[in-house]
Amino acid sequence: MSPSDAIHLLLSQKWTEARIAAAVGTSQPTINRIKQGTAPRYSLGEALIRLANQPEPEGKVA
Image (cartoon, rainbow, N blue to C red; front, side, top):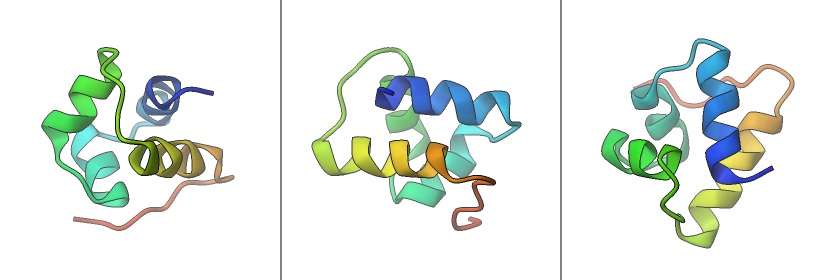
């Protein structure tokens, strides 16, 4: 799974870009750029994939 795939999966589970960003410690515009195909730094990509692979992603609430 790529970071972009992880974002699309989370969005399909009713997460917002802002909620995803808060859960992984980045900004909503960064999540949008990754969703569009921009490669994130390694640690952010890994955090997105971990979040998407959780049975029921909770993340930090903003």
